[in-house]
Image (tube, rainbow, N blue to C red; front, side, top):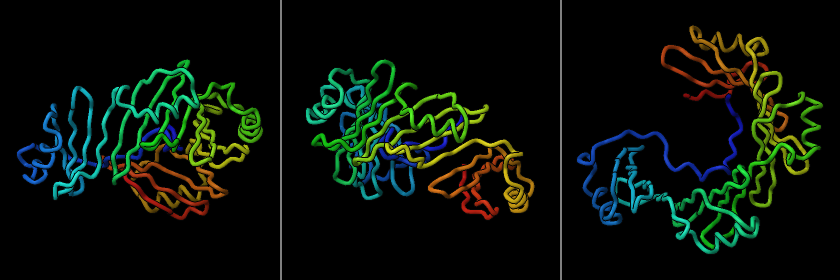
Length: 273
């Protein structure tokens, strides 16, 4: 199963990108000293180089931490797991305003650019809930997994009318900056679909797995011309605000790229996979 539309509300902003593991002896002294001064009680330390910066994964009191340090020894970001007792009371009060009784399954604190963000995950009746707040407890993002019966009937009716009856894999409700969205992942006729609706039941985005013979001929021709010798795999289509794009995974030896096309077959973007 592959999924298309990633709800950023399900995780804190990505902290790290591509990195390469290095030995501590190869870490510049100014970087190593800055880390040891700040985290003198750290254990299980692993170093990685990352676009001119240094990433450190370690534990403090058996809790996972990750830090990004620049080559001058300045700590840029710090992500740490929290015990429930370490969660700000303001954050807990915000959660209680939505859910009266809960058990925390995971909590993280992110310090980035002088700002502190908390992410708290809960599981209620086997469904996931996530809260992202600032340090004063202001709710930034709230996401919860829905039962099939909790998806608005108007949304289900629209999907069935235009695309067919979905076999729902998972469904989500999210609030962010006063905006409410619904995401539904499932299969229709054995093909993966992802739908994103707002609370006015307007379809914001739809992405769908395709079979090769469903890809327009001009898109396939453009792909074969530009990438002769590549194998075409995993085609999909995206409808976003009335704009339609096609995505093809192109494979040649160990190289894998994702190429997007418009309806006329013009290449829009190329990304490494």
